[in-house]
Length: 99
Image 1 (cartoon, one colour):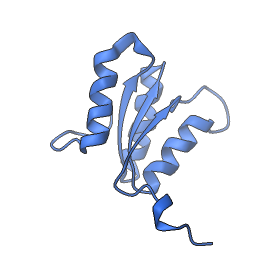
Image 2 (spheres, rainbow, N blue to C red):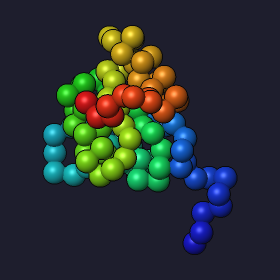
Image 3 (cartoon, rainbow, N blue to C red):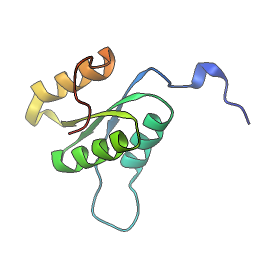
């Protein structure tokens, strides 16, 4: 089934809240969502309360050729989160995507 163009995310910004991964054998919903959005062409801000986990997800996305930036969420690092949102929206020209 072909997805109508208006539903595609190619070239758009997305925020994957809870995009880190809890230890376990399966992939979590947040990481899976962030990965699929990136595979479909979105620039993804991977936000999670565990920054190391968000960075791991962002690095996985970048390794696959996608664009992702990790940020701590919720508000314990408000400046970092705002920066991440700005990077996702603006495309982060000149910024190294990943952790």
